[in-house]
Image (cartoon, rainbow, N blue to C red):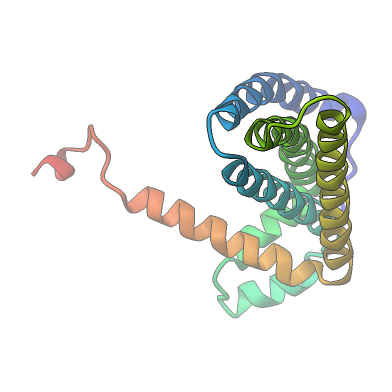
Length: 194
């Protein structure tokens, strides 16, 4: 296993931190649209955000928990995605940082902001005022927090118990996306114009 030092990882750490600032701003600004939709649509969006955060968190933990050996065996049998899985495991600290820290944490912030927007919309729909309005906000944000923590706990448990299939599935999905992207005609490609 390759040893990494803090000094060697510093450029990656700085680039991840620099990337999360604009991403967080863009995604958090995108939650403004939740103020314009019905509360139940916002609730569905918040649940989806929680699920995305939990899935990426699970992948981050699975990449750190997985071992290369099974993927080498799969690669020798030409199993689709096995080579990409080896790359994921070899770069586990980067994959874990991006999946768990960048995507997972941004999803957590977004779900909290979304919960506030949903609570506001629900209060307006029910014409609730006073202490009942505050109670609605507290209950909905607490519910979203519990859902987020519970979903991440389930994902991490699965990632520790079965990291190999999780990493293999993610690598197959990534290979399919990259394969589709490579095959799609580009605007500047002369063959696409013909």
